[in-house]
Image (cartoon, rainbow, N blue to C red; front, side):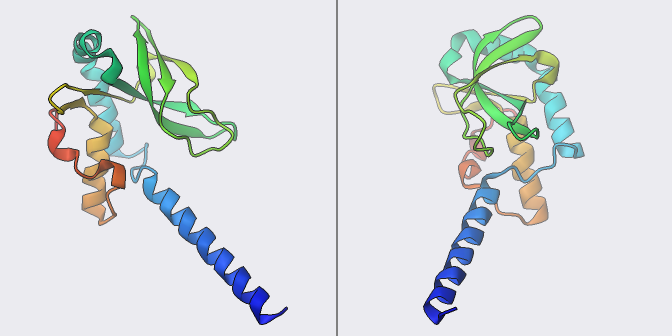
Length: 162
């Protein structure tokens, strides 16, 4: 193997590792089985009456977090644009980029309300209602010394229900 080929191979491996680390930094730093996550999900579900109150006034600014099955058979926790909020189910369109390249962003999902993980309503003044799992993720990152994902930096002060 020539020195040039070795250098190209080493560079390719280094870039691959760097990209993988960047993707992981975007991924939730909180275990969905942890006490923090479970408490956040519980709080989101117990405040469902508030979501029912806010959704009609802010339909375009209302997101829900749900777990969906990926093409590879794992579960991915995604944000989706809430379209309908029924008595027992919700209908939403996935808006966050999915990590499984075989899964589809933009896909409509119907989820039992018992499986709702979180909700998020952006108010006209920039404040955010809900986002309990987001707050838990920020708190876990701080407590464990992990970097707070780029997408979450700066919104903590806008979380009304913190």
